[in-house]
Length: 194
Image (cartoon, rainbow, N blue to C red; front, top):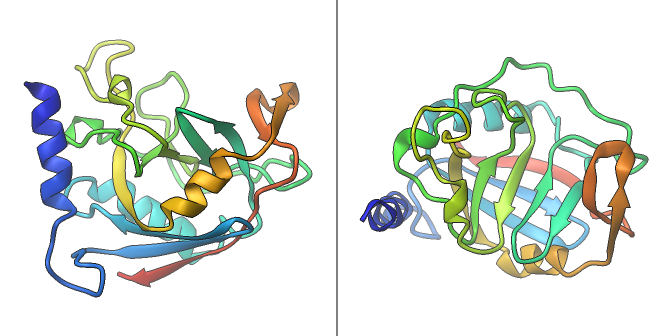
């Protein structure tokens, strides 16, 4: 029953009637070497996370970073490394984990990546390639917090799927099991609507 409620929550938040796409709320775009990805951000469901993401976008933090973890049938992740695997250090504080807001890690949603610590997200994010309900909030105990969903792909799932299909290799220095052989770069990220 909880999973059904989470699915309904995502559908309700993303089903506004404003704007060209029908999405009401902030939007941003990732212009990547595999195509454009337009994101609708859930400012009501994950306000702290959305504000954090938009702040990084506005200062150009994501410009020139790569998708450093690509796992077909799971997700694609970015927000930390340049093409030469030089790490770009985030300069904003950790964000409170908003995974307890009832949103679900469904295909096409964007969520914050973090360490094992529940409230350790900063700049890294991932886009779900499938419904990853095992990443949802289950409680406040150790290992139960989940990963905070803060938006959805409005346009460009074809680009997301292209990224998911690139050849990858292990990258032990950065701990990634799915580093694209040919870098998939976020040429720029821009806020479209605040």
